[in-house]
Length: 419
Image (cartoon, rainbow, N blue to C red; front, side, top):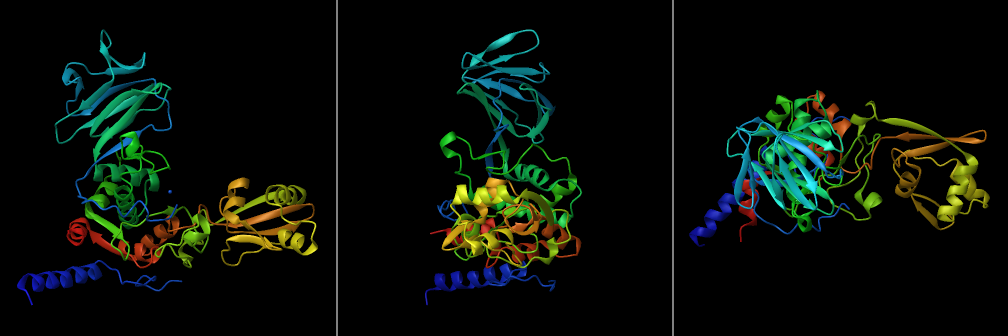
């Protein structure tokens, strides 16, 4: 055998061995201890090499039509650039105001209008660089961001793009998605999933000249983390991502609480994904969002089923089913007489916390007793927090909620993807 082939085979053996050291067993759905936000990969497989120090472009205040704001340096010195020229810097001008004026970005200080431009970049070359951004119109509380800022005037508003290193962005996402005072091991789980999601979706807004937005359409991001424990968790898991059995970055979907059982991807998004399988999740059942209730009149419920879904409420058997619907385990449909109503549609129409509910008659009313909060696919955040508190490590938590996956470092993933 050619010597180069022998070397490659030996390298593969060691790489796969190191995967198992990370805590995963292919095909397993159980952690070592035995207690007991379209889910497809269609946009995840166009591979490029990823790096732990990747720079990402995040549209901030993406749900706000910004008309004006001020910016100042919290750490470091920032320069304001337009048309390839430095027009201001924070060493001499503590506060700079940017406003939308006649389809341009107007830059001014307290005393003077510096000029109007189509594009403005606010950047610093220093290692530690943090800027404060305060929206004036509309009025919003100030936020603090790391990295640089690019501002353009588009479609009657200021579009603001935060140019930032991947892990600083991930730390901000972890705080926004997880809150403060969560277990350290849970922060590690959330950091790995946020990193996996970000890299898998870098092209999500490519047509709009940025990578990701800061809202639930991508990942919630309010700027720099204020928690040292979160930054430590991000650093401790640097470069780690989760891949499926084809070495594609997974769709790292998660929800608040599963109600005791997660959902299959096809029951929510219509597409079966190998690693998004329903699991019995006892870790979630005593957590804050494990249960909910909602009252509704019988007449309103039956009218909704008839008018919106043409459900045969005049049929006695179908009517009885609709009034006494029960779920001991998760179902995908309310069905009778060959009519199947997706529970995800009922949840959306009636703004229920989950699809995991049972119905109990109470005179002229119905009591919906529900379990869980969210779509139910992938990781249950509250269940993962409970696992972390019980002493489970982050590979065990990830492997519990995402079947047939591997935890891998980016440099190893790049090795496998080299042609």
